[in-house]
Image (cartoon, rainbow, N blue to C red):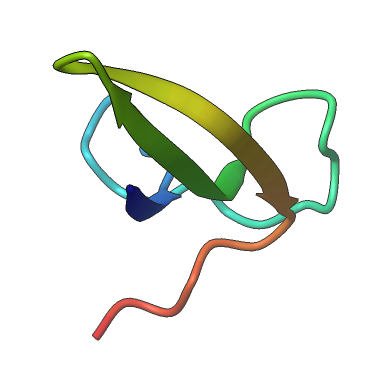
Amino acid sequence: MAIAQLRRLALDEDGRPYEPDGDLSGTFCEMARYVLVRRGGTWWLAVGQNTPLPTPPTAR
């Protein structure tokens, strides 16, 4: 079994994060978590959750 957590940050054509506007029907960032299981040498997705983030995280 493997657990993966990903953060997807939406960038504009210049590679900068989009300005937050709270509109989730357009471009947005997200946090995704997946649980994968291996059966017979093949990895299968058992569970997945994608959570939209209305504002991009602060750049560090």
